[in-house]
Image 1 (cartoon, rainbow, N blue to C red):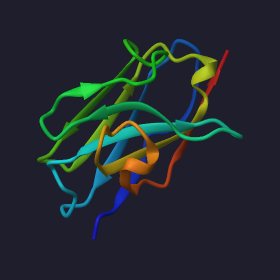
Image 2: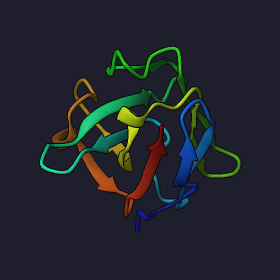
Image 3: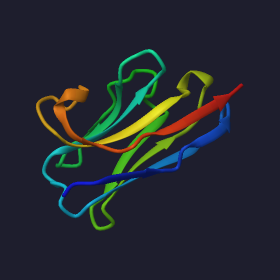
Image 4: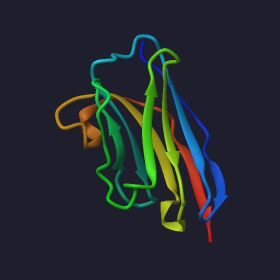
Length: 123
């Protein structure tokens, strides 16, 4: 059974750093993509960063590019999102997702989701 467990959310001041962590179960396919999405209240989930089974990563969110970095440690069954220079507009619920297909950029392309964790950035 694939399970995702997130940690590392919280509150930080603008300009600060947070590391999001997503522990995934051993049953999670290593050959498919994993990603991080965020959701602002009243809006749909939007892709922030994704990593393919090959290790290649992309950043669909132009506002996150060059500030957010995704990585994965298969030995530790853990997906990370390092968020630097956080801005108030980064405030959102953040979700990790696993076993993505297709272009791996849209929520419906993923099979499994973490519970989500709130990130709040104050000015």
